Image (cartoon, rainbow, N blue to C red; front, side):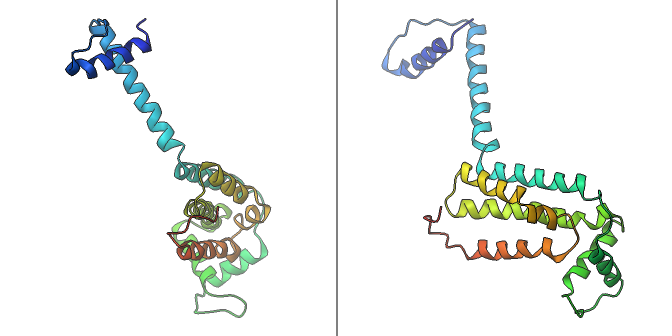
Length: 197
């Protein structure tokens, strides 16, 4: 088998040919093809390291895990009392109600129009909100100067936090309010300051 060092020496010889240097390495067609394939493999490995393990890729992985957790578990128990209330209010949309703002009724109505009245259907948008919460958390960490470990730690904390595991399983405004708060915080971060993390 033609060694990697020989491939490197051959590349050096090709780069040095203009200076009339000789490495003493001779290659046939198969050996040259092997070296060329090694360079392709190195490029693929480098691409994976740069993109598939980047902070943004880590954010996507955690968000997908969060979404799948809720999609597989949000139908395991019956309707929460407030969910029945919101289902009833979605039948009578208005600009406001006695004890809550109109947005949750609109979200409930949207879920019923797009899907149906099943548990999994009405709890799909809260699960998406939970995944987006992880995305915003990761983006905030990167904006504050955090690298891969900091992004992993931040996303993991949101993923396993019991309060978010509960909120993002039910159709309530509690699943959406943190999303709005984090988005507002992300918008207000000074882009030229990197000393938070």
